[in-house]
Amino acid sequence: MPTTATTSALADQLRAAAPQIANELGHRASRAAALDPGGVARPREPFDLAMLVVELCSAALEDDADVRDYVRSRVDSWESSGARLALQGVPVTETIEWLRCLEHVISDRVLSCDGLDMVRARTALGRITALFDALCDRELRSYTSTYDDLSNWYSRVGTDLVTCLASGGPVEPHTVNGQARVLGIDPHQPFRAVTVYHDGDPSPAHWARVRQRVLDLLSRYDPKRESVLRDRPGMLLAIVPVDRPGPALPEVLNRLLADEELAATLFVSIGEQVDSLPLAGRSCRQSLSALEIGIYRAQRGKVVQCTEVILEVLLAHNAWVSNRIVTTRLSPLLEKPHLVDTLRAYISAEMSLQRTAELLVVHPNTVAYRLRQIATLTGRDMRKLTDMADLVVGLTALDVIEMRQDSGPDRVDLRAKLLG
Image (cartoon, rainbow, N blue to C red; front, side, top):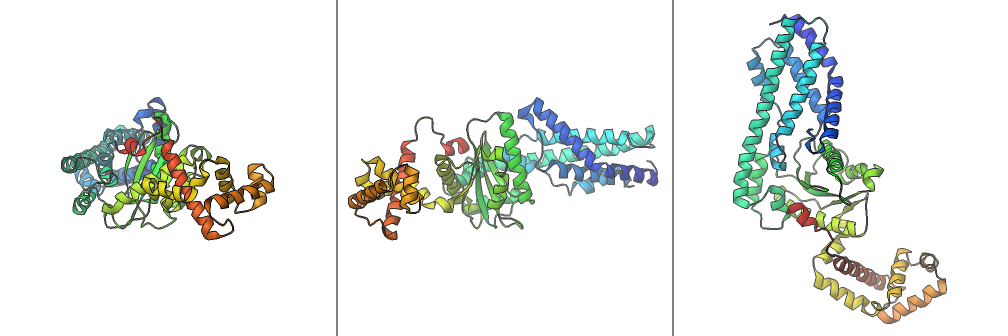
């Protein structure tokens, strides 16, 4: 065992180099990702987590206790990510590889420290190796334990937690609460569902980068890491606790979409807040429905909240009501598409004749004539807000019907893509 002074000096040098070590780990991970896009092995907050491990190693070097006692006391407080990996269906080997890569970076840094002879180097590396062995063992045990619990869950309900909640089937609150506690999640707090969809068919490497950006954002918003998620290539659904200090979840997601590249390709939607995890299925289904509306309307780069399209969501789930609304409000106009287009433009132009004419590239007198036709055919007074509101609802129902009719064989079934 080296003297306390020597080990303290070595620990101080390691602490001072912590930012460089974390950055070097990031560079190695980036190079590995470029060579093997499908094997990116990074935790949600790689820099902060690397800094924490460096501190553990520094403390291990200056601690006089037996290394096994030190490791046992320190690692017991380690916040393992194995449970989260098991829930997300991600192999635990990703975290193990990440830890081993960090071990190599730290070991290289220790060997480059000043005033280190062979005996002291061997002792220091022995303590670091013991620490990393214990961390990896902790991850494996956490993963295995949670995986076994999840297997029991699967045997009872036949699916994973997010799918169970989002599918719309009956949910037993005590079963969901028990599973949440296994994962270290407080189920008795408000949650909201967030859905992210990448337009087109992104490559695995590109989706891995986008996915990591989203997960990094959510982990900063939810430092307790109580979110649960399910994702498929190009799509991700997360159930996120919202009882957190700082900006609200929609504002946080808007920051993500401030990136022009992401805004051009991502559709993002949010369900309503619910009071507990067993109720989160409702928010999931609302978020998926809002996403469907957002995709149909080409609302890329915008956070579509369920409350903003609540009428469309309700009508999308009730075809009879949609058809009845269109029949009673717009039926006489359906054979005259130019009148429907004029009505849409008139509403979009806030009932201004001049602006409507500019949108349609016609004379204002033509707009006035068409509005009189609409009033005669529908029996609505185009100057009354109540009558105009009826027509707005009719157009919304017509949009929903057309959205369903446009659902050809190439249409992506969002629920099947995510939950199938």
